[in-house]
Image (tube, rainbow, N blue to C red; front, top):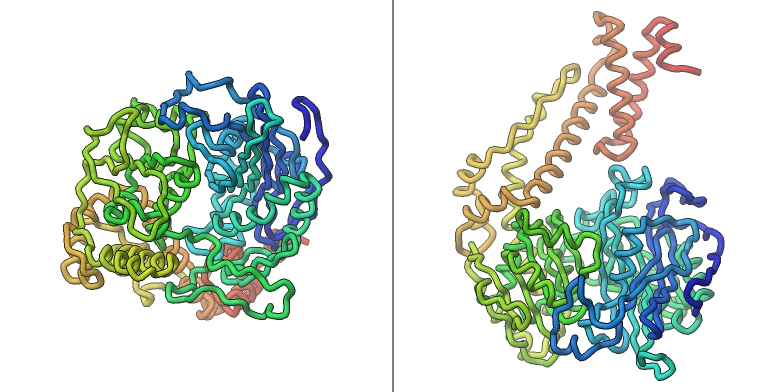
Length: 625
């Protein structure tokens, strides 16, 4: 490895592919073709040899950033669950350093570098020996640095709302190795390989790191450069496509989810690649975790946790390791699918994060965030938070592990806090005991974990759909009738959402029609109206309905006789029509309006006809050479 303070020049920019960032950046010399769906990803490696506590990371990235932090080896303080504050840390302070970047011209702010450094390694409270995988999520600093991120990306068209790119955040996927090494002063040798992306494809990128990291730890930069070259040749991750992704002599076969997919769709089967040697490794999903394994210790409270997620309540998850922390947070945020999770969430968070003060301030109410941590110090710092979930070490025995108990926040102890869900929240819906009995029966019959996960995921999906369907029906009733859309007049407006009217509609079209659970549905809806998820859902549906109205209005114009309309119209009115039609065409061609191609052709013809009816001087202005 490089010595501290030495400099290694990174190789030149690699060819851009469908999985690379397609937008220009400051100092960036490469750009993907506009037709390809860009995905920022960074493969980053960090390592530390004990010594005097100096971290020596090596990062290799593709259209991303590089950095990491090394942690000291497991200590006796960590095993006792000792809290370590930001002003007092066991051992010497750890430092991060940058060594190598793929590509070399990718830019990160100092704050982003620092956050990635610390999040790339478990803290001193996690005795992670061997190989560990986990993930984190950080906020991009300084706003959008690439104009291509404004609005919907080409690769997001048709993608489920929960799987679209996040222009303001990076996802980090970490492969961490810690092994004993007698040649090192501290006795441990630590390395991390990190991949950054804007896509929440946790299962795909963990599988990729599982192939690349062990090889990289032996061969270092040349191995990583070859992998990046292979990834550059991958096809664009367009929703609905089944892709074969070759890397390191292995072919990963994945299906990119789309909005057209149905819950009944079975696992992906090899198709059209039976002759490939070696046979492809089929991933059942690019993003779904083993939900049953993640929720094993909290199955008795999964419905209460679903309510907390639905209402966007602040939740602190204290886990024994970054792997358990990140999986629990990602599992919780996936409970609301197909509803988009609109709150902030951090699968793994440390006291060194740049947003530590923002999340831990007591001068205002706790933010709407799900925070995954491993340092018990957070119990003291965030004891004013309304909901804290502490989980213990995972036990993978055949029986159902001991369920965490529901406890009052007053029983929360600063250091010696036992596993449990500490909250004063009372669930609005009655617990579905039949679900727990079904899962317990599956354990007794040694039912595979993926089958148990399917049962649990189906239950949460139906619960979310039962809650959302009445909202969808009421929202659809606010749409103006199509007969009210007249070609030459401004289209009618969507009627406002009135909460009282909606609540009254629940008597005849409420969730009781599709869900057997009893409880205070009205109270749950009233609290939902105050949550970020209602605001996010309403804005998205209102935007889609507005686009539909514009599309119907454009179709009405194209079906009318423009020549008859122009007979008694002034030049100003004709020019105004031309400009509005051009604006609609630009939006429709950008796939922001659901319009057929035949309608677009007729709109272009109408524009040409209208321009031809104007004097030559106006034609020259509207159609410059």
